[in-house]
Length: 223
Image 1 (cartoon, rainbow, N blue to C red):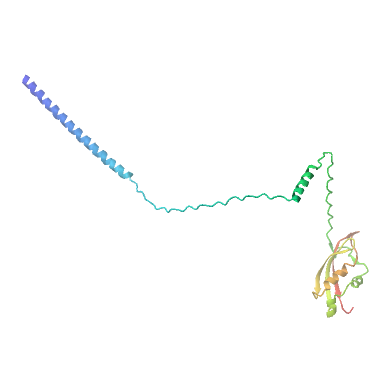
Image 2 (image 1 turned 60 degrees about the vertical axis):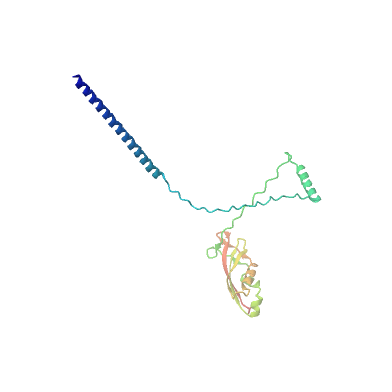
């Protein structure tokens, strides 16, 4: 019986030793495998981290140095005696100015004169009583000076004037509507004669009014 117990104990010891050896071998293989796996993974990660570096050629720029001009120096100019006297007199005038508070202020400027607006002229065909030339049209023709150029050429002329007769019977704003022939002086002669004539003013009701008129003037060399 004791012999069997010893054999069984011896077998158990062998099984225990074999099991320990197997576990040790398994641990060695596992450690070796883990080292190889870690080294391979490190190599892969190192491959991923490698970046491509491109080298570009950069041209060398030339620095241009700016030359600063020296600041202009103002040279004091000696003043003449006349300039010194002028400065002294102006300084004295300022010092002697009288700023007395009791001095009354200057009077205010006069107000601007009110503009008298003229009434608009009424057309001669609308007014109740048209202006009439004092002395008749013969007064106008008596004041006409026949143009020398036209007289020398033996040319007759015809002019139509437009003008306004004021409330006082004075002709104004005279213009030439028509002149035949032109550039012979007929227009100027007719205007000059009209300005020497006076009119009886036009009437609208019982009040004189400004009237716009048109007047033909004939130049006949035979007269």
